[in-house]
Length: 270
Image (cartoon, rainbow, N blue to C red; front, side):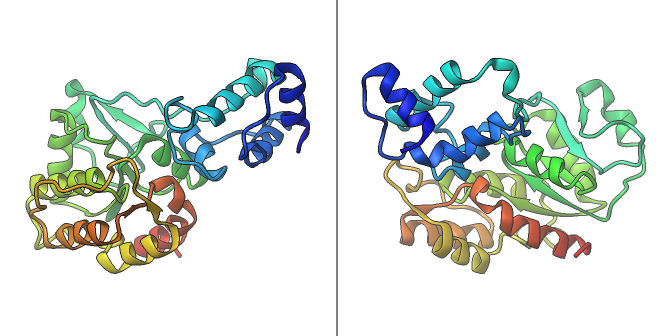
């Protein structure tokens, strides 16, 4: 037991959930006023799936316990966390263009012409599927050239800027290892088109995916792995097959340590 679960049981008259102690480290971080990563990363670091602290339906007992402790043991101004909310219908990147603008840069439809006239500041960039992972990596590595995919948001501004960049710099893609994540990667690959120049799976390769599934795979009990339209790109086909065979998924938030080795190696910064 811990001071948090003891207080929860004393005040509510209910037993703390079995996995309550997995949150002790997070609560200690809050009490010490440390800056926290986005909620999805917090949840994965505690041993849960990424949406546990945002969606009460994922793990109702843990959500209720987490919410009670935050509401009753801490003041709102004690909790300092990086938000994952980034404007979605635009193009968001960091360290891509030669500018002294604060990073990350958000490009709206009215800025496309001007931004594309800027020189690029990198020969390579990594496309990140999820908002929270993008923000956390940028916080930890402020000079990395990163582009936010923002899930399934293929808005016109994003597509236009990506198409232009794809002719100038090498791109690598990193996303969730589930059916939706592979579909998003394949959709982006199809849009960019120039597969002779671009290999978006250069880091998230089939062999690397096999290693991640072996080391981090979670059994799919929520239909995250399912039969879908077959990917067009051969690499994503192979990865989709691996997911179907293993019936496991891996969330990006689980792979931060691995990313922090593989990304600088590919960028040439290791």
